[in-house]
Length: 567
Image (cartoon, rainbow, N blue to C red; front, side):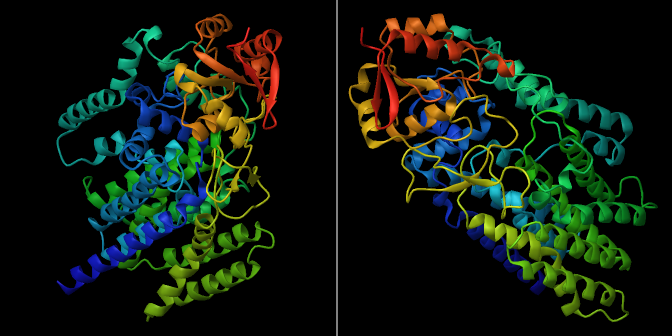
């Protein structure tokens, strides 16, 4: 009973600490990824925009992801009003819930200390700290399923396992597919254009742009094959290594060692089944991220964090409690060496830390093999293994992050970690955050991956008389539109979608909107468009050219503006 009470208190401390880490200074990131924040603002004003995940309340076009990840944020904004906290807090709470889930999953099969170790690894993984403090969809995408493990290990007859898997598969299709079916059945004229597709198709969005195209590099949504650096060691390189790989080698070693130790266990052994569930999660997802030929960003690796955490906790417990101390000692030494390598990539950033981690790890590893193992030795070994990711985690939480491609921890010289401008219309305190251009290219269009704050003069112009129009303004690209929309809380049409390559609207349709006086202004930011240089539609470039030829340009607050209601 005393032990259970101590375990509950320890879990409470872990979750409270996780909450503090994930919520600390959260509002400093402003709108974070303004692309999704604008869609949240739109959904808070329109249930139609909420359902479809539209970029604006008038529902011209959707974001380039299915909208489930937006819904918790929208509901939060509807309850508490539009603010960076209302948008970002749901992600932070998902992070705390994920840590609790990892703890519970390990604890049910092992000791409390194993669950706490797993939970701590999950909480301190730098990319997890990053994404649970951000509003990209990844916070909601960390729980895949594993049919093969159930088929092999479930404690029921074979054909019953098959039937249960078929039923589970049908349930998954219904749960994941009802929204796709609903959108596919709605006539295109009665819903927003499906952003990220070239054919206004929700299936192209889900299976092409966000599916097969990410794996084989085929051109979907006008982005093209923009990634040429796939390889077996991608998760350990200078871009992704500091985000996720601190304990990745340890997790793989512990998975193999614990599986070998349980090789004579019955087919239905629950501990081995759990090792295989988490192991298949890690190996399959890790290989996909390593070898995918389409667009890849290091923050995707947050999906690996639960598997790594669970394998470290459960694998260590299996080996330690069964007397196989050699593997944990090797893991401690190896993790210390790898942490030293990762820390050395951040030139000039706390250079002493890598040395301390290396000495502590290599010093405690041999002591773990002695007949009398002191608790202090084990504690120092754990601290040595977690010190590197913990330091990156604190640095991540202490730094604002904005734009479409955030990164965790200090700069390593890999990827595109560099400061970017503000991600919101009027961020508190003039937010400057970490983000970057990633590997998506620019397509010649400004504002592709971040939104700038419009001037007070331009904001006042857009707000004046806006109630008489469906859209206060239109501009090329979703992030350009997001900056103006978040500043005014008025619908702004994102011509061409995320990067200006979606054929939405067509030039003919845009002319019709203008003739019907539905759009007040056209803002000239990013008027070059990406066009067919990336394989997408050139409608946005044609619209921008037509506006420039037809209407008179004026400069408001340093920005080119066209009044579409003028003759």
